[in-house]
Image 1 (cartoon, rainbow, N blue to C red):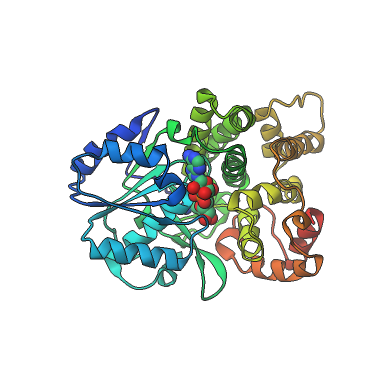
Image 2 (cartoon, rainbow, N blue to C red):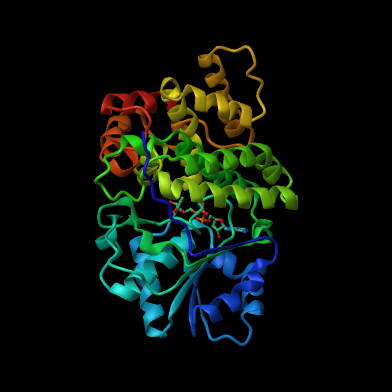
Length: 397
Ligand code: NAD
């Protein structure tokens, strides 16, 4: 009868155009003397890099632009070494999820030592780290509010995640103006990642059905995460096409930054499901971006789950502006799946695994690796077997 849940988010979120200018006062409030800025060459050499340097004029800081897309444990180790050598006392992730995640992992290593892989999986970070500030320049991952740092573990050759409430950023500065320079493809792939977060959070197994004695960070969907996820789905449905095809449309960029943030607030508590579980073994075998893999798998996984969450898929159809009046429950749910598929196609996301270089004979091994990612598989609304995973992969092939 009584549903008990917990909810966590970043210490503070500062949202809106030109909020990057709030950074100096944030640093002062946190008593930070010398922040370590993690970014990549692309952002570091762009107007965003120049802008943050202007904003921080008079501050002592280290600007580390050796970040890479889809970073590895080695990236985080290299960042942490410079951070410590230079005596920095906070990290700032400036960029997409890749830079923010390295900033989180570098903060862990600078505070507690060891290797990033020591902290993989859930609840392994022993306490609060040095302050972490997240400034996203993409609108997709929601990493600015999540307890996650995703890194490729080079030793195991697999992407993995550190999931711990201790690494939720102290402050998230979400300035939609920083996303205006994203090219259409990055906009599409990061934007559909936000949709993947919102949809997987929305249909995730309810917190009521997860064991109450486990201190899960990803504790299933709740009344609060459902409201957030619905809001994020509607924002993506109405704004992602505009952001992709009219990159300078500030309203669409604003709404996509908001969608990404809110989707992060949802999935960063409910957890995700099979779409994200599939993305890890797929990432190992392809050069496709995280967002591309999420966007590719999303309609196939949602379709597999159709019978387990028909009212929610009907609601998704409505959020996409589809008319569901007079339809049966299953038809209305089908409209939700179709709306997601149409968005995927309209914005040019790869629609088949073969398009990104996956071979049919690899599907069983991908399924076998996916089923082991328990923290994500448990969130799926339908119980799954390895054979089910192979069927989903075949549909997507
Ligand atoms: P990204 O950070 O890898 O960036 C992709 C590319 O876009 C890079 O070349 C970058 O320089 C460029 N770029 C970023 N912002 C730009 C801008 N404003 N203008 C022009 N170019 C810009 O992309 P992402 O999708 O944000 O992050 C992906 C990573 O985040 C993956 O490793 C993924 O696994 C991870 N992730 C983390 C979480 C989390 O909660 N921590 C959630 C989802 C995904």
